Amino acid sequence: MSMVDSFEKIPCEIFANTQEGSRHVADEIAAIIRERQKNNQSCVLGLATGSTPISLYVELVRMHREEGLSFKNVVTFNLDEYYPVERDAFQSYWNFMHRHLFNHIDIIPENIHIPNGELPKEQIKSHCIEYEQMIDEAGGIDLQILGIGNNGHIGFNEPGSSIFSKTRLITLDNSTRIANSREFQNIAKVPRMAITSGISTILKAHRIILMAWGFKAQIIARAVEGHVTEQVPASILQQHNNCTFILDEEAASELTRFKSPWLTGEIEWSPKMIKRAVVNMALKLNKPVLGLTTYDYNENGLGDLLVEKGDAYEINLQVFYMLRDSITGWPGGKPNAVIPNHPERSEPYPKTCIIFSPHPDDDIISMGGTFMRLHDQGHDVHVAYQTSGNIAVTDEFVTRFIDFAVGFEDLFEMDNQRSRKILDYAQKFVSTKKPNQMDTMEIRSIKGLIRRCEAKATCRYVGLKDENIHFQNLPFYETGTIEKNPMGEEDVKVTMALLRKVKPQQVYCAGDLADPHGTHRVCLDIVFESLRRIQAAGEEWVKDCWVWLYKGAWQEWDIADIEMAIPMSPDQMMKKRYGIFIHQSQKDMVPFQGSDNREFWQRAEERNGNTANLYAELGLTKYAAMEAFVRWHY
Ligand code: F6R
Image 1: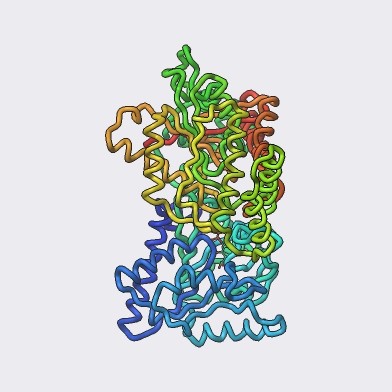
Image 2 (image 1 turned 180 degrees about the horizontal axis):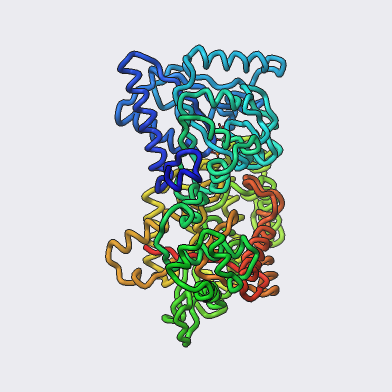
């Protein structure tokens, strides 16, 4: 048994990204299907919904189209379905599965099984019993695909579900309803119940693959390394003898082999690794870094580090200086000062900087203090708003603003026939709009305009010139629905053109992988791809361009990874708060809010305050708040 195995009680395979992980799973599925075809047998798959398996289904569809993979011998059983839900509703899992997979392959419709969310309640029990019987009659599930909820649920077996549970009607956890509200206009529209395969049903599968991407790292670590407990239903998979977790690097990042690799074997002690080990130990022991002793190192699995580096106090000092040197009030570098370990260069001064903001408010929410400092310290700051953000505006805002346009024209005696017509049209559209109906192009553009005006107002509040504000309206985002397209050639072209025009020495972008809609992730990939191509073209200016990543609204960098921390005074925090307030369309339970229902300014303040507190706990000066950045090297 390797050291890793002594921590990981479920085999984990880790891939560089979602696509590679999904391809691996698709290959395994294709192999079973083909093997069964050779013997004229059927292949029974257990399938999941949610954002996780989408890339798997994309790959299976590709294999069908390009490699002739046939699904004629495939029988499927889906894990779950909302209750009650109409089969044809956009959010039903029936609809999801057809949209993403079944409509694009040659599966025989009678072989598709999805719990029925349309039945009257009194028939559900017998439906569930039948569902189990049908699985048995099909010979059991050959391969069960699972995702995992943030609370550890598999299927919709919420924490507390028994290991003996069978297919049944359950009440959804509030956290699940909030997480899944991204598919619905608002939380109130998320069904309260669901039909789900039970844990015992899942465990009967001959083979199980659980996939997880991005921000699931914490719960993955608990499921893989923690005790088996019904409180973390996925941990029960430790008892299955043929289960594998397929993870991307982000989702695997809390496993001991990555989080504390010194505990799972010999490692090379780079300065970054030393910082991570010592910072984690200090926080765990509730001690400032300079207070750690030889005893602490030995007791916490860092004896090797002591042997290699000698004295505990020397190591403490090294880490303390790294932390100290990451703090600066000069995000663009301090002009006319030679500070050897400053996170940024002092030359050139002033710098040309560009902040890429995935949505129209990420700049101010996630790095508002730094944004203001860069401008106030004389740098030429540009902001690129990557997407229109139009789906996150309520209908009420649309009519309110057109009403304003009509009133404005009235006030100044302008001809307002046209705007009145538009108001009539919008009022009619909004009042007859079905729950999940897509907005028309006109309505979407008005919503985009509202957000554009808010973004512009924020830039003016910071002090930017209008010509430094760029609205990219990247096409991948403009689907009108919660599901976005993948990064496209046009997105990269538009971004390369802007970078070439601005020729920045500093680029800031959202290194946020936890965006529930995936928009931040795509926006980041677009900037990376654009920079890589410009670099490959050998353009001089890009050699001098540093990239700093901030985290979007959902997470913060691990304290040990932060390479630049910008402190904020209470006044600066207040100024940032007012900057966030300008985004009025994003206040008070916006549509598609994700899993955190606090307002954005609250999240930002808590997060920035928390970073400052952690620095203070480690023994550094206590600031009111701090924004944090990690440098990306390309
Ligand atoms: C869906 C299902 C759920 C999801 C889980 C994760 O059929 O069974 O357990 O796998 O809620 O959802 P995503 O993938 O959207 O994060």
